[in-house]
Image (cartoon, rainbow, N blue to C red; front, side):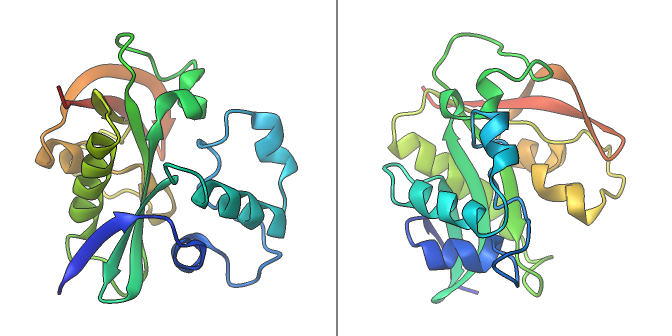
Length: 191
């Protein structure tokens, strides 16, 4: 498998991984944490969510990275400066210092491509992308599941073990819980 992770700068490729089967369906499109306004997030419905992602993909830097198997988009990792996300004001996930960090908050692998280590490659690609854009550090907010199974619909945040395998260390506990598991703040210093 020749996987390459690149900037998510092609909307159709992002849509292939994140978009719904029906364009009018209400799916996250990985906007829930990317938008700084919960009001905007709640107001965007159906096709408007995809159009908002189209706008983000056209920006520099784009909102994440895509894993490709040849020309086929097979995975996604959301990564962007924390200041441009809802993590900038999230009361349940602390700021450990004043560094201008980047956040990774969603890792998604398309069905049929799971169980092949793509999450590891996507996280590494997200870190490389943040480094290329001058990030001082990268944070993630995965569940600390102790090896227990995480419901697939909630697995997008990743696991502590995934982040540890990528060289991240636990920087703080959080007050956030997903699928019954506490989330921890994992940090990788890039300086």
